[in-house]
Length: 412
Image (tube, rainbow, N blue to C red):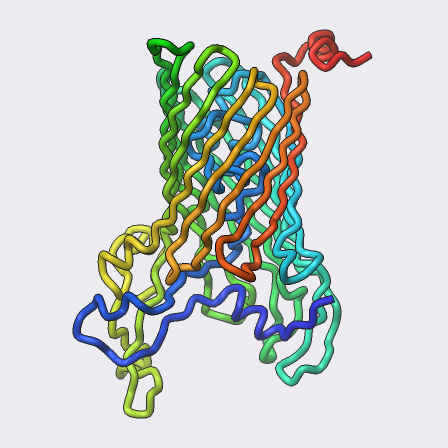
């Protein structure tokens, strides 16, 4: 059981804070400071399934599968099967606690060769937490949790290009209606949407069975800010994210395939600014009682403004903007579409979260059944994500016909 102050939990999980420092003349002098972007509901950025989890948390430009909803739903219409369902589970942050878990359920139906629909549920449990007040007095034991529900419609624009729209409902209950500073908290609610594109082109190749080029684009979690109290003016941004991927697959002989995929991600959320200090070392305010920003931009803006502002608002200028781009690289080898070996690498700048890890995993497919497992190796010592496991069980069908389904799965 974890014992956590409500105040500390809210600040740690949700706050988007800047660093008050002395003001240097050169923006590059801000580059050595920690300035990670934080948002509400960061669980939406976790790769929930084992295939992506084994390939460096990438998925924008990999081949279509049942879990495409989490990365690039436009891929669904390129799926070779008609419909499928998948369940994924991951024990999370096991280096810190033993009862935080992530579960993910997804399903899709390819209605025609031109369009498909999909649905997914993502559930994140923070385990049992003993809540305390600011003085450390016990209040109650709760099980904070968050979940999202989303639906996708994907359609081909041309034979090689598709688009998808994904509306999403988000629920986040971190405080179980406890009082903080005399104010009753409430679950956070939000509506959001994703827009995604996917390109896939097959080519003939000399000395090979074939080759495939893939490209993916997605902007996810575009939605209203989230608040955990009706009595506060503070509202936190959702983790709106830009995802770009490029992949290349080689089919050597009809039995052996190798896919290489790269991906970059950037949060489309304002970067915390640097605030000016007064003579006492405290944040300085102007005549309207507004904090004076020494470097960067005001983060208290609307969602559309925040998306565009995120490309030029870092206190360290263009170099810091580049630091906010993380990247992943994934490899997938398959033998007869039956046995899969995967590996990947993920990198995030040390000043923007410092997540750096290697991943690997295997997968097995037999008729309609797919089993995938992924394992994460943290590069840094004592990293909370070290030794993270992901498990995925999925079923893929080529038809809705009952007799054909029985034949595919050899069911009686």
